[in-house]
Image: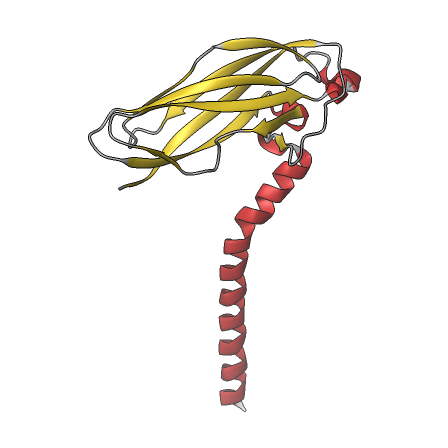
Length: 177
């Protein structure tokens, strides 16, 4: 009887540990889906197919920020520090990256938008984020970002105080080649 209880307890603990392990791997994609659906944490939406955005009325200043992890020997800067964008109009900007090392390196970037509440209105049509980027030793590359700010922002009273949005990218090293 005692041995049977010990087996049930051991089995319960093993199942609990397996469930926790599975949940830990599933948490990143679940959190990502949650952020994309809600705009939480400044997560922008991504346009999968091109639909002409509805024309808006507000002008918003979009500032561009670039960061590089200390382990990645790249120079990464926006070609323009800011752009004035009318809601609903598509804009195209560029970031420039340069590999300052003598090695070929693959990096990847993440982004966010501030203020956080503007993330759900910031729609990226095309960008280089979350994709591995190879820069050969000494290579420079222009990286385009096409986006628009949804005209729905014009109708949201919670966004009345927003006249400036910052799009920030951070590059991280994936590996040397």
